[in-house]
Amino acid sequence: MNVFQSLVGTRAPAAAILVRLMVGVVFLSEGILKFMQPDALGVGRFAKIGIPAPEIMGPFVGVCEIVGGGLVLAGLLTRLGALVLAIDISVAILSTKIPILLGHGFWMFQAPALAHYGFWSMMHEARTDLCMWLGTLLLMITGAGRWSVDALLTRRKEKG
Image (cartoon, rainbow, N blue to C red; front, side, top):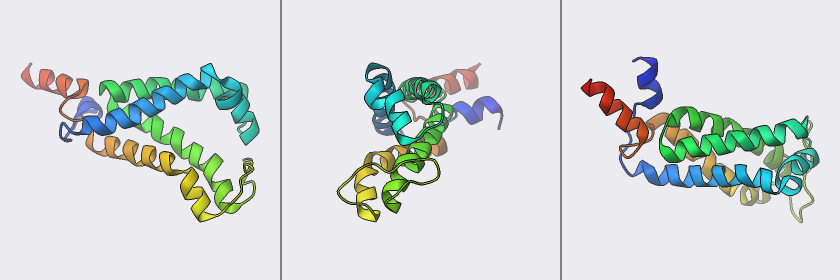
């Protein structure tokens, strides 16, 4: 299998568009919100959590979410976009949900002020993150599906 095929090839059914919509819309909107509400969701939040260089990482993560979410929505280079988003959400889980599980700061990350800590509190807070993580994994494994730019590019390459 060549590099082109490994990036755009897909064996997912057309229904994969539902996972692409879920993952793409969530990440695209969250990326935009990091610029629209930087104190609450971007640089300010990153500083509060303990992310190093929040003035760089906030916009960087916002751009990754906008570009990755857009690629996933279009079904263009879906595996690459999903990989970027999987890394993004893995860091989010590590930096925000592990401190909730432990009930105190973890590594360089601060625990938020919550009424409850532990497994069930973490599961409640992580429900969207876990869905996004699993969605990105599915897209990395199966590709974008029949209704995608990736599938269109694959069909064109096979014809010519």
